[in-house]
Length: 251
Length: 329
Ligand SMILES: Nc1ncnc2c1ncn2[C@@H]1O[C@H](COP(=O)(O)OP(=O)(O)O)[C@@H](O)[C@H]1O
Ligand SMILES: [Mg+2]
Image (cartoon, rainbow over all chains, first blue to last red; front, top):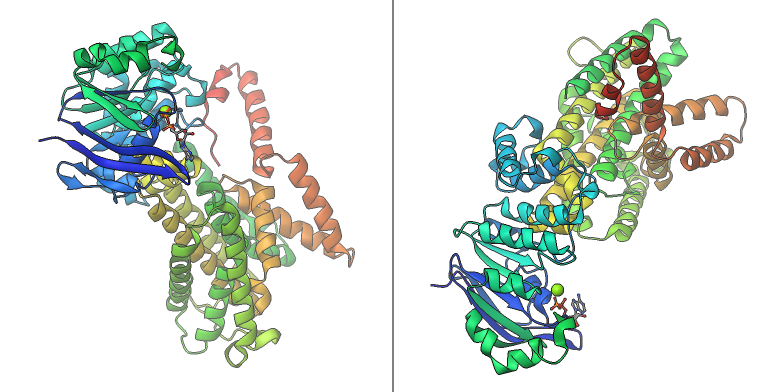
């Protein structure tokens, strides 16, 4: 059974229709990459799936449960988490404090108003584990706005992972990165455990083919193809739109 | 945390020791300052930790004050009466908050202003119960089980202790998970929502706590002043408390208390010299806001750092300790 199932969703902004009957399926643990030129509607698709934007029609299922009317925070508790194309962090807080904020979301004491958060040992332990795992312990006390862009991008993913999701939506995790940072991020994405399904919007074709099990191509708000990396690589229409004559600047 | 603990102990000692040096006039002034500090801290909580700027906070102060004045005619137990005041103002905040917190920043300002004015008019109109525009005197007498509180000294200690308790409760809140989350929502609401937080619950929680605390301050004021009038809920009073918060320091807990102290001292000092005190106050406050970036509490920290640094170097201790020290308030 598919973990996430998007069925014929459409979305318009006033007179501008951005998504036309988009469907998508993601199996547990799958690495599903979404490609398409700028303005194709990829971010809008994420916003619809996570209900930051209401859909006009269609349905969305997570684990067989219809979720298109559930609020964004509710979806996190059902196991779906996301990152943003533009870094969306707490700049004046330290790396550690950012992680604390992300980790408390699933704790039963998140409504506690009396006992200090700083005294919670489970949060400290989990924070240390994450910092060690990604080798950023030395950065823990640094304010997030003072991190390098690449480090911020990484933290963006780590915050989304803090809720221990079943499915993680990554919106252009490598955008704006240097080639070295891109390679690092690609490696990091490949290292994520298979217990998490990934839906990744990505432009860098090297990264796309390094991580993808399946690729969905979105063009002017329509899915023109969803298939294996091989199928996508060999599809004439995709070649034309995407790899063809001078279309590189789209990518 | 250790620093916060030390500051709290120092605060308690200060409150206890002040009557040793103060005149009767000073004692009275300090008592009023404690009450206004609680009020200012309650507004400071939503302004500085939840990003909600209210222009109607005096509405809750009025509810607390009138509760003691009106219900105090029938209920004499002070604890019960204070509890009723806090519950009524808290519930009012909870119910109105459900609607208010959905609005954007500007509309929140407007709708809270309307809320305050509504109460002002209500206290004015309900003449049979509230005395209308003339106000009413308060018959309830504060008695916390140690006899009736009547002397200035007794009032001083009661309000001082109330202030310390309010400060400690607020401190606990802002350090708690819910407090940290509320602050996070103020910084970046969309991200907190995407992290799994029901942001409305936290905003409503902060607004309710703030309203309840403002009501508590109002009920204390009722006992202290033995007279209440609709002015306690006027928008000018809401504006005054907002000024206290801003000159003291938004985003800190103690800043609003400092702002309240400065405001009330200035007001008393200047009004003894001239009838035109509101104008002079206005000018001074504008200057304070303009030059006091971030509020008076930040000047105090700055001076403290200078003194602290000098001491450290005198003793030959490493200087970097000063830098590492986290800023508390
Ligand atoms: N909130 C919005 N209001 C109006 N138009 C929008 C909004 N968000 C996106 N769009 C438009 O929808 C189209 C798709 O945008 P987007 O989903 O961000 O594309 P992509 O992520 O594939 O680059 C663009 O034409 C964009 O201008
Ligand atoms: Mg996009």
